[in-house]
Length: 318
Image 1 (cartoon, rainbow, N blue to C red):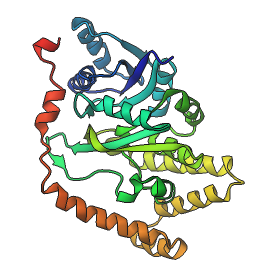
Image 2 (spheres, helix red, strand yellow):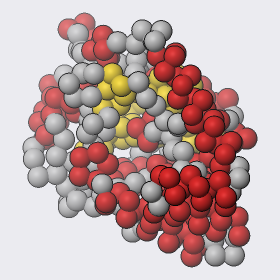
Image 3 (spheres, helix red, strand yellow):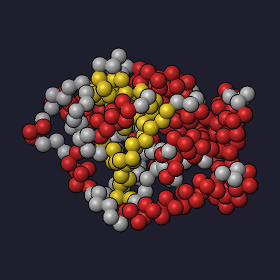
Image 4 (cartoon, rainbow, N blue to C red):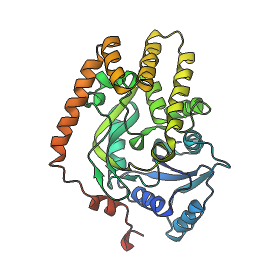
């Protein structure tokens, strides 16, 4: 293992062919890192991956392998089956319609991993819509979540999550956790993996730069997730309660997470301030961060020309 710096797992399920092709191009154009591409199909009914295989062969693109699940098993199982055959030291997951931000995105992930013994690394992303509108938003919501001091409290207690589309990890570290989660959750892997990493006192890193273009109005959590996604969180909570039944701190995390997921926002605020006064500091941080970002976005010159450049393969690059 470790023949490549990265194995980039492209998770497909009835994916749009053009978006899949553009996602592959954004990976192919990465510089100063070695990587393989694993196109992992979760039992699709269409022919998009078959078409992309012809495109890959036609353009003589190297280090591409394919992983086909015989039937739809969900995102977690799809990623797990791909990671098992990966030859990269680090794993970067991505979906069609999401793209690496520029030619040095993987290099910046790699630099972060080399800086410290991070098991998982997340980053900022530019959120855009299918009608090519850039949204002024990104996760985590509170600025403090990026800090090692507040990361565990903000994510494990207050559900301030990183964007899963920016997720990257150490292969050997994450493989047993993925195996553990198969059968517990189907569609959500980012929060459970980060939660498990943090409660086991492992390091999670954050790159405070845009490393991904994120298509925010598509995907399973946006289009047909809804209650399915919510029920998966409760499945994960049930699992953690049983696994860590003697750990009072973890039980406290789960109890508060259930509160955040089951009450309306006004009751959550009142109960949170009463049950966990530290929520007040998080709430203030979140509000201040949103105001600060609105101001900074006035000077943000990010535009879609960067995305068009990273997703277009010129004649010279073929």
